[in-house]
Image 1 (cartoon, rainbow, N blue to C red):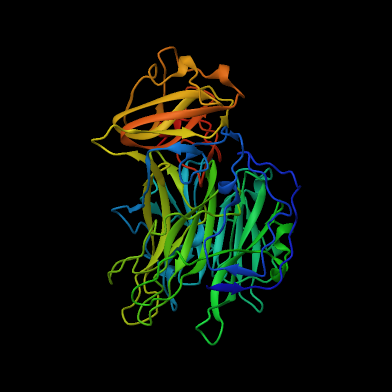
Image 2: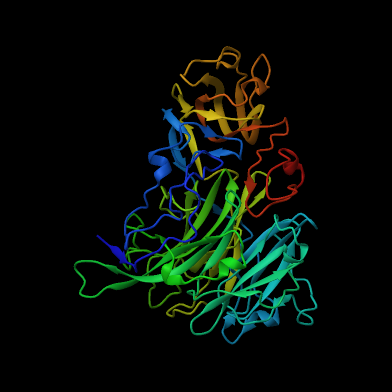
Length: 542
């Protein structure tokens, strides 16, 4: 068995013993969980999937079927889906003089950030302008066609931070009360030891001097905001030794340490060796046929999306001597912000195996991970064309991959059969109207059950109006109406009857708009803040 041999770890900032999350999950104490002195090279155990809450509150966000957390029993089949590259990819190329330097041409997100800013209704992208050189900002009205405005930071350019750089992340903090700190930049500082600098900005263009310097940190470290618990999570790269019995010496492997703090400034003060070992690649991550090396975790960016946290795991499977790193992005899902479930080890967003493609090497995620644009999720990623016969990166650009909204997984009833059912665990809600995201060629009906599994008469499947069609927001109605207000706070189950179709998610909204009250990643047209408070209006806001 492969293992990472780690230093003895100390718990950091323990949470209260009885901290219960929005979804009913009770966090263990101490928190973050103390890990053993080794991080096994095997899939992470996820406690809330082994012992889910007796009653699951579902007031926050669309409820996705990426795991069995919500499912008591089903005869449907779960299908995981992959994103597709947009036909206009790459959408950002190095076409300015300052984007081609001695180190190479680059207009790529290396985390950085892509956000929709509702203040001026623009997509905004921060990116590496020139390989390991400055940080620039581009804007777009549709997320596909990008402009590079001229700013006053470096005359005649769109550069917003001139300092030489490596990994950098920009976060649009919609919950920040101080307008001068609305944008936050976490930037690698080259030195011995390497550290990260924190900067603030009111507009993403004009940045403060360094506000805080971190403790020591490896180069590809990032952060994200966990709004469910109101903490900043620092995803810190580590290179530790893993041991395999048939090798004479330990081998170095990339993985992550975990650090959280409610204050981004105070959170910069850490001693890396005391932080918990968090997560790495494991034995289920497939090896490349040409290298046959065990995978490693190169980076982990994450964001709150609807009722859970979505992580993009940059999986490193080794580096050929004649090619830039063929990293690719694999999805992970967390409902407590620490434990990750990765059921599908295929690349959500892959590297190309054809030399000459823009992403022949080193596909990396953007900070903010994804945006919600109508019926789709937008993922911006960098790719490197490479130089055949060399490890050089070559031309570095930014591409766009898309996925159906909530489309990571669906519960499927195939065509030609009698269909099947899905019954949830016991849930509780304060909303009044049921909605689904579904692609139904046959028919879908829903019914409401009491805790013991008995049908509540007005909400039976027989009295449910048949749902058909392919939409990411569909209201479910019964012949006696659609208002579920009389069921507020009661422990209930929902049962879905599906024939020939896919069910992606469900939620109970407080009103007819279908607003989910969940988080919308890095935002999107029509949303007024970090949460979906507008429902169908966001589709009209494109």
